[in-house]
Amino acid sequence: MIGNDLETARENLPSHVAIIMDGNGRWAEKRGLLRYFGHDAGMKAMTEIVRYASDMGIGYLSVYAFSTENWKRSEEEVSGIFKLLLIYVDKELDELHRNNCKVNILGDTTGMSRIVLKALEKVREKTKGNTGMIFNICLGYGGRAELARAARSLAGKVADGTIAPGEIDEDAITDALYTGGMPDPDLLIRPGGEKRLSNFMLWQCAYTEFVFCETLWPDFTKEDFDKAITEYEARKRRFGGRK
Image 1 (cartoon, rainbow, N blue to C red):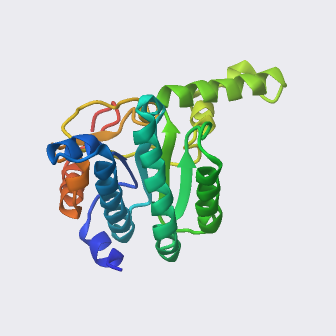
Image 2: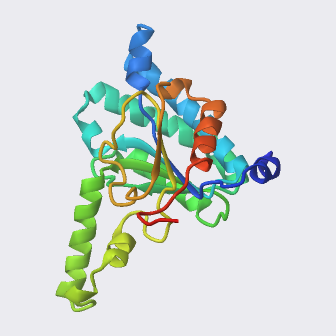
């Protein structure tokens, strides 16, 4: 473990880092490979970054692994992604637990197979008591769907008299999101060359710092992560105000 050395070397470490893991398909296509192999390489890159972020002392790491829109992809590609997820859980669960990481699954798991749901429950259950880095795997996740879900939850509370309509404020909405109780991302990293949110954490990223890079996700390294953290540390965050 190298956490202490890395943490003390940083002056302004973000508490919560979010990553849009983009470019797996293009990485495979550039090499004349099936998209499955791009997702496999992307899963390996994720494993390294999760380990590194935990060692660095990051409090929360959220990765955009499978969006609500990804269900539109071919059955072959979707089944391949979930096959790789099962392999990841089986292979990395013990290390995540040893490193004291707590794993959350954020999103709508409707439509996922029983074997996938069983694996997700296994990782949640084994790590639920851990007190180290919170690792959020966003699956079946969409920012708009999340806001609609929060609205339905709050409407239900109004209907049963738990809260009054006037009590629905920003804090109430924040608490009703999948990330309720967590800090908003300080930093969002998007490799792959695109410069958009793609329906990821729309509410939570109101004041998040963005770092974009051209590197495709499977080629994203600890050095790239360091560069993003360094760029974040150099910025002055004002949250709409002035110094």
